[in-house]
Image (cartoon, rainbow, N blue to C red; front, side, top):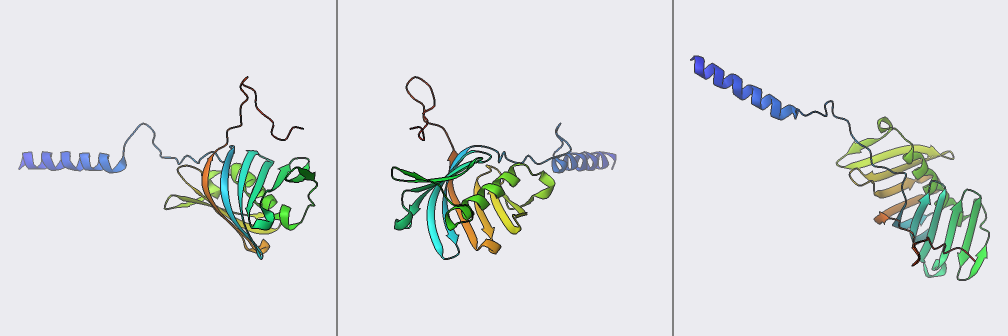
Length: 190
């Protein structure tokens, strides 16, 4: 009987250790992906009645470029958001983009939401089935942003108050073009 009790005690101890996952890293803390990075991502955008596709590049916190590919009427239009304001290019033409226009509002909401997400603490995020969800007011409108928990890749952005919905795909790190001498090529230089 004594041997049976020892065997049972050993099995309970082993089971308990395997269930608790005893490691040197206790207590367990989740590591949030770094959202403050540079990347490109494809976006399917619905903004009120406008349906568009664009490639978004995040160069930095307040430095974005939205290159539209659809609809045909927007193909080739590129909106740049910089700390000093907006600009737009179409073909070889460079022009100022008006603030609070259909072409700057959607990019600004996306940029502001990602900026907030980049600085938020873990306790403001909810996670379910590997998807991080972040909801916050951006310029008085509720925005919900989702991202993959393991990679940090954006999944979607919803802003019902602005009639904006964005689905993101094919996110990859942004790498600047390098010249043969090893310097960065500034594609916007004249």
